[in-house]
Image (cartoon, rainbow, N blue to C red; front, side):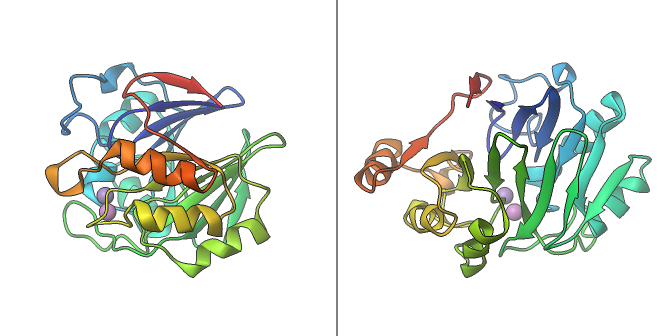
Amino acid sequence: MKIQYLGHAAFLITINGTNLLVDPFISGGPHKNKIDINNIEVDYILLTHGHGDHVADTEDIAKRTGATLVSNFEIVNWYEQKGIKGHAMNHGGKFEFDFGTIKYVYATHSSSLPDGTYAGNPGGFVIWTEKECLYIAGDTGLTMDMKLIPLLCPPLNLAILPIGDNYTMGYEEAIIASDFVDCKQIIACHYDTMPIIKVDQNLVITKFREIGKEIHFLEIGRIKEY
Ligand code: NI
Ligand code: MN
């Protein structure tokens, strides 16, 4: 799979030739000059929850590309009223899409849409094919439910975890989360976008290395193959 970091918690993931855009918050963010949302080709848009720093560019990109939105029932419903097609899921459910399987899993956070509409319960995604398995935690604190993931899904190759603290777990808990989900390769997100979630990247890298794991801080815009 190929992964391109688009800043904050946004990623463009290519699996089996299908482009999945996760939590697009680009044009209104501090990294807006590095990525042009008009150049992103997308088949599916995955939203973990309704907060603006995860959904901001969804409408523009979905309308231009005709991408299918995948999220919980409430979020898909809200976007369907704007003319965007969606595939609604809810916690514990999985579905086999044309490129692979997505399971919508628990996250402990809050969730409302930019106009204040209730956005259901926040979640994360586990995405797998015959060859690979990726966990996208979404905005979440550390939760015991993460221990269910290795029981219910194929072994993880990669986990995208928030580490910026304050709004989500910090890196110390992300280390425990990586044990709970049984994954050695971590990609960091939800850090450094604003001063309140600034992290010391070298310290975080060292702390993961001490327990035999690797955390990646991806350069915005660069495509990496995993
Ligand atoms: Ni949030
Ligand atoms: Mn957030």
